[in-house]
Length: 324
Image 1 (tube, rainbow, N blue to C red):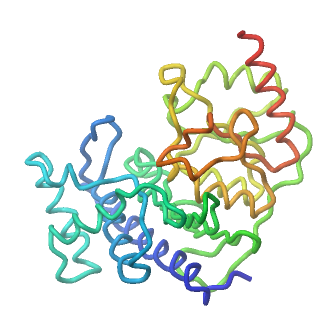
Image 2: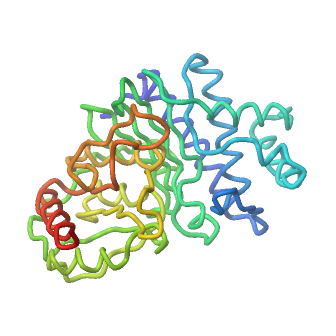
């Protein structure tokens, strides 16, 4: 059973539940404000509100721990972002009476750190486009110590009625309803060994992968079913539940030098591993979370139920050799 009395575990589970519930309420509202960040990905009131609320909680509970997170308050300090700032402030006041714009900007900016020997890493709304579509997204939080993920928690409000998935290194992976933390179920990846029967998971957004390479890869593996498309690290949750067998993060041909952000992989990677799965990059190397805010020493991601991992790596290597 997961130990909620453990200070870091209890904090991670509690704060992800709180912020995921806030995000769920905000998704249900009609007028979600979205602007474009410099990289053209959408950012919503919920991204900022979740990061602010979590930054505040971390400041109170583990004040000396750095936070590495996706957002910063630059947009909220601009003339363009003032309407968004007002909406974020109004959202935070729901749960933190007396919150001010300056306080919430400071809470958000706690996430501007670089990795150290011990830090928390957050994606406040992983899968923002899914959030805006009313589809899948996740609040993803992890604790990294000396480059290794020790705790990973995913809040998935739209997954199977709303679940929270928590993993602790060496202690397994557990799922509980998001509405009430009263029933923890231990998760286990699938036992599937036939690649032809594999259920493959990939990003919903086509610009997040290489569709041509994905098709070639699936043909080489002999996979019969079409991939299941899904936003966010909710895919890792399905893999941990045994409802998927393989997950690929291939490199888009339009951005072949792309480096994965650590907040897009940290929590989900431990969730899969503690459920008995395996996570590496496309070359079979373990993910290195100590090299900065991106996985500079890795190329793409492969996650599996372990049984299918080696054959997936072999096919990836063979397909790559055909192009050289």
